[in-house]
Image (cartoon, rainbow, N blue to C red; front, side, top):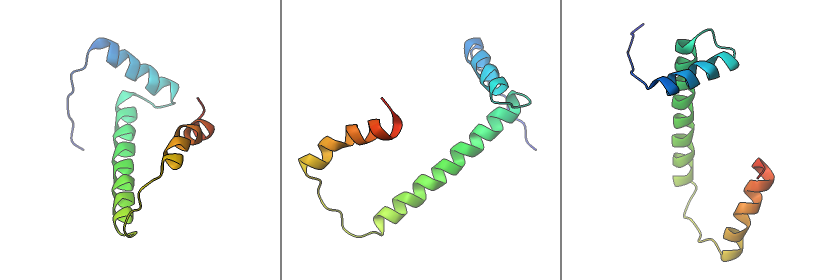
Length: 80
């Protein structure tokens, strides 16, 4: 395994350590490693979705009604 050193301001390190502890990780290293793996997995997922979108055929313009409903859809799905 390779080791890297990262300098962060003390308030950020405190926040990272607290989040690691509250999330049940053994230490900050485990938390940061898992977080980076999650970011990489999400990036791959986004790339796959983008490729799927490109292969789905030509796009169609949205109408004003569809655009206007987006905020309400997001609020109902994720809360306000």
